[in-house]
Length: 305
Image 1 (cartoon, rainbow, N blue to C red):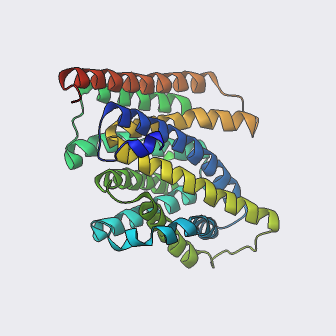
Image 2: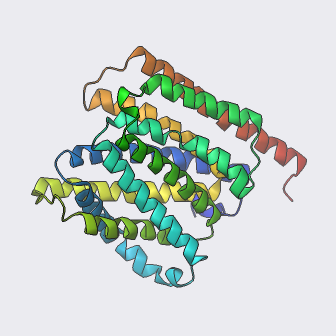
Image 3: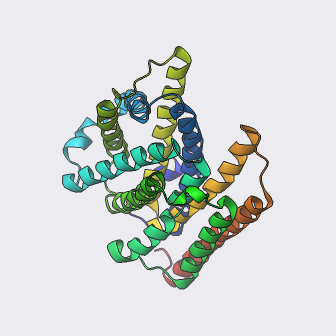
């Protein structure tokens, strides 16, 4: 039995929170790679085509699990909230790829890194999670680091930028709902998200369709498989730990952006980027250490039986 199997999704113990943080970091690294791959693809193919073929590859990969756990789909909790979650996920994916088709990836990531601010603000109101001033301070400092590192361009006030900001807000609400529905099986959550992008992508793909080459089919399949793994990680992360704890680790996106920019595109990071990344990492480490300290205090006050 693995560590994650031993940790209940309903358990907010320190071990569950640390596992949730680790899974969020893994998901962000995979999402970052998938985002860079997606931006490369939409330079040639339509956004709807990317969404549809990506979802096709994901659903094919998931089909054995879907069949094995088909009974879970018949007894999922709160179907209307599940539907809203799938809609928000579809809107978020479409918004991201539409935005990166017109804006630099760094600018779009800047808007999406506003997500921890949205989640932290909403998690206290919607989920009733307790958020202290120290965590608020670390999150705001981390966001300041994002602004220093990415320095949004003059294109920030434009309709693609507004789409990106709307996608960030959709993603924030999506994660809060995921946390609320943490009793739902992982396969149900992931499948519903890909079905949403499959349907919207199928409706959009005839507009601007370009017949993919054999090599491009490999890229579409890779995008689908990466998204499957990343979604499982982020969904499990939100089951194991409060949203306000794990979501701030999205700031690690900037580290991956610098790495992919240097290795793949030969972009040498600017001093401001390095300084901003250092601030982001410092803020994330503070939240991590703070959670570990609170967990030790909780164990000391309420020792396990």
